[in-house]
Length: 118
Length: 109
Image 1: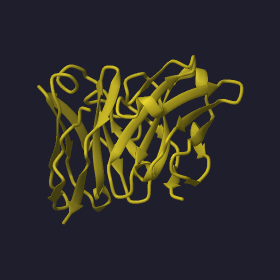
Image 2 (image 1 turned 180 degrees about the horizontal axis):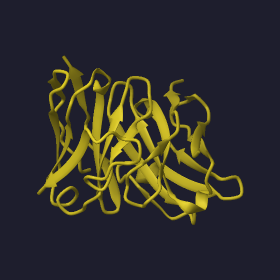
Image 3 (image 1 turned 30 degrees about the vertical axis):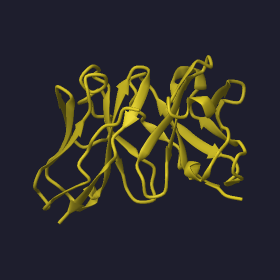
């Protein structure tokens, strides 16, 4: 059974960097594509980035200058860094799997809430 | 940034059918057959209902179906049930990006 679990600080100060990790179990991270998505309070879903195990990635153009994605195949994890955060980055952050490279994400983590506040 | 347009809300009675539209452009929905639909209940992570316009993952009831015409994709839910009350989101590939619709709240009357 494939499971994803997000982890990271729940509170980040404005202008600092948000760092999250998605731990993958039940499947090798080498076998699929992976994504980060967020959802601001009471709002819709926003795609952040896609990443392949090789490290190649695509990022939302509105966030691209602040986003960095990495993959650690030895730990079966992938990570998100979002720099220079503001209150508008407060959201539930999800990681998800795309098993077929068709941009349909079939397994999601439970989500982790990140609040940007001083 | 491209965005997909969905109705804010739709409603239907148990047993009826409802259709949720997702309107994009020739750069996303109209160009690629990579349209997905998700269901999200309050406090839960989204669940994949449809991928590749009309493919249902294992375990998704056949009451849920997807289609596309031009720049507009649609999700049809037939035989509405109380548990279908949720938010629904479409997404589309827009090479090399992915965009979501704003979401539609389905109310089962």
